[in-house]
Length: 381
Image 1 (cartoon, rainbow, N blue to C red):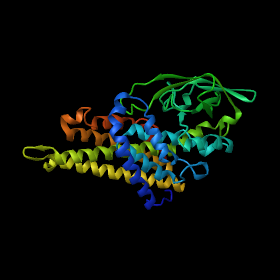
Image 2: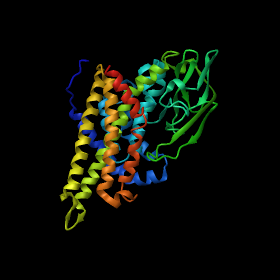
Image 3: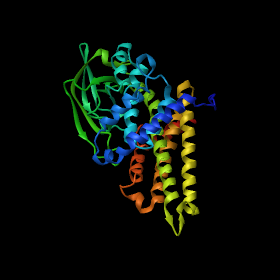
Image 4: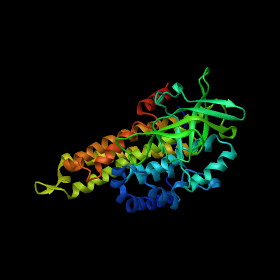
């Protein structure tokens, strides 16, 4: 067994910042959430708000214009925003996902070129790994990059890519040695010739975050745009996802807590048979179980985030466990929350049907829960 610290603390300044972010989310984002979902349009006003409040600086170190507050604080912020709107939380999540490869493996020149403008929120990135025929298995990737002088020519189509059409640049993974199944990570700016926005998906949830197929048709990028070493792209992808799947877990905890809080408030006011429905054991036990599961999920998430911040061994297993447990919790809790509201839970006038739709994706993206269970089981051997 790895030597793992069982202790983590949440600094008071984290709690204070969280309270501020929660207030911003409730006052500025929550009133827009139903419209954002219904129109399925990217909320540029929310992006601007998050940038102005330095919230988009949370994923970055101080030397590149960020807050330098680490993984735990970042995911506490994701949780606060997701309590009212999971789509808007994804704006912050993608800010980490699409820049972490550069932070972890990029040259100093790449860091200076891209990170400060993302820390201010001026630029937004995207992470382009999955393909139509290569989702959970990146080894089946078809997108290729061929060296031509001091440039690389990238050709292929990606799929399920968040921030499509919004991102200023894409972290694109492409096969550079097909015989040995080796890929390489590249930065591809959105204004490069040959890049285009393909099909956009019509989704069950997180509808305000555009998802779809970026197309790379002979896109040329210079050698300087290679992230890390040529042929080591899979390592870049896996190291990134080990950290960023905590964002999906935090989003899930936020959804679960938001749904629980709403159901509790509703059950306090809704009367049947002459008394509030929270006085009926069938309802009160549901609410208790929702609160228990959400609190347990948060503890696992925070522990995994603290391990990531400390660089502890075993953090990959813990990030997978957090992702599975938190996302399964979000799905179970939102289903129960809809049930507490009865018919009202099923209609768009109330937010719980949206929360239930948003919860489902947390079990799928950043590595499906089936893949995470595989990762966890392998770590036990």
